[in-house]
Structures are given as C-alpha cells and as structure tokens.
Image 1 (cartoon, one colour):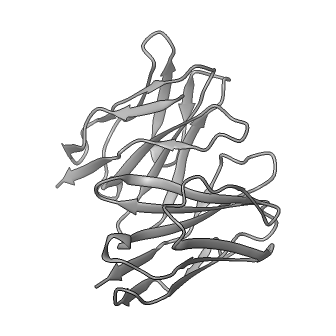
Image 2: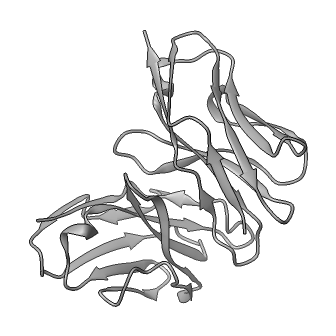
Amino acid sequence: DAGVIQSPRHEVTEMGQEVTLRCKPISGHDYLFWYRQTMMRGLELLIYFNNNVPIDDSGMPEDRFSAKMPNASFSTLKIQPSEPRDSAVYFCASSPMGAKNIQYFGAGTRLSVL
Amino acid sequence: AQSVTQLDSHVSVSEGTPVLLRCNYSSSYSPSLFWYVQHPNKGLQLLLKYTSAATLVKGINGFEAEFKKSETSFHLTKPSAHMSDAAEYFCVVSVGGNTPLVFGKGTRLSVIA
C-alpha cells in the first residue's frame, strides 16, 4: 500500500481565497483524521471520521473550515475564506477498525496564506 | 482529562552515545501511551506503543520506552544514537473510546557527528 496520500504537498494562496486539501487514506482503514501543526500550538486534531461519518469536529477552528468524506477512499478539508493565521502544515491520518489510536500519517500539506 | 509533558524541547547528543527523551503524562484512567517520530518534511510515524501489557516496550530502530506508573513517566531511550535518528519526537497519550490522542509539544533530537 502507498500509505496515506495528501495533495497538494505545498499550497500558497492569498487571503480570502478558498483552499481545498485532499486526502486518500490507506485502503481498508475505517478512521480518518485531520490535524493541523503549528510552531505555537503543536499538533491539533481538527476532526475525525469513522466509516465516512464525522464523529468529532470540536477541533475545527471556526465556520470557515469544513471537512467531508464522500466515500471511504477520499476526504477534503476546505478553508473558505482563508486567512494568514491558517498558515500551517495540515496532516491527514488513517487507522484501522479496532486500532483507532494506531494512526498512519500522510506527508502533510504545507499551507501558506499571504 | 489527560495530558502529556515532554520535558525537553531540544536534546543534542553525539553519534554513538545514548539517547533519553523524557515524557510525563497525566490521566484519570489507565492510559495507552505512544511515541511518534517525525523526520523533516515527513508525516509522523509510530515508533512504539504501551497498552497495559509489558511495561518495557520495544519499538523500531532500536528505541524502547518504559512505562512507570509510580512516576507517571514514559521516557524514550536508545543505547546508541545514529545520525538518522535526528528528528522530532512526540509523546502521545490516550484513554481510549472516542477520546482523541493528546500529543506532547515534541522534542527535537539533534545528533552530532
């Protein structure tokens, strides 16, 4: 398996623009997680899904952030409109049923909002 | 609520010398504990996990960690550092169920030739 695949690896955009980050989890994994990593706040869980259903979105910063998982092999994290304080590395991770906490991470998307 | 404290933000060792990365946790329940490693521009990778079995846990790349309930610690060690060990290391705690993983702030390990 190729592991968790995230795209794009780098994104540079201007304030106010819409940004969409993409994730393909490991085939057969039932859980999918979105994290944000910054120097100031470290690694924060934004939202996670179980069998494509959002379970906990309490980490989503505000209404500008939304996440979807239309099927078992694809998820998106959207920021609209983007702001400079959204600049961070965004990670997607997945894990199998029965081992929710054994998470496999993608390489991340480095987002810069100018 | 659970929390984890990594006592050093940066550790520097010489190649071939022992590594010690310190982690203390706080949890109301019996925790599961993990160490993850993040190499530059990469995602996090699981090094090892403790889930209430043996208190001394062996992981990949020669790392191991010992769960000490009396000290609420889960320190990561390696007998001999290699240049490729230079990375960021995260101590993580979980109490299971629907509670999310709680990550420490990370310890950056530098290995000097």
